[in-house]
Picture 1: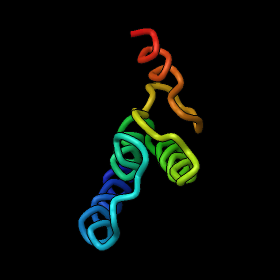
Picture 2: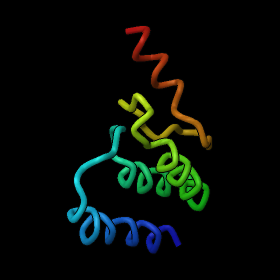
Picture 3: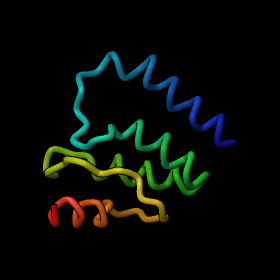
Length: 86
């Protein structure tokens, strides 16, 4: 199941994404985030990816937001804290 979901995202990246201007406000991009989330969390990773896509809009600051090692539908606050402490 993971392989099928990842293949669908890669198909999107190869066939649909090039036809639209870059607009993701986060790093990694939302589609790359979805792939990593699926690899780490399986089906729950799809929910994490969808939540990330819903957070990606013009009114958000954006920036670095790697996939956390635990399941959450919120932005990776642990990463932000570590970055601010540096």
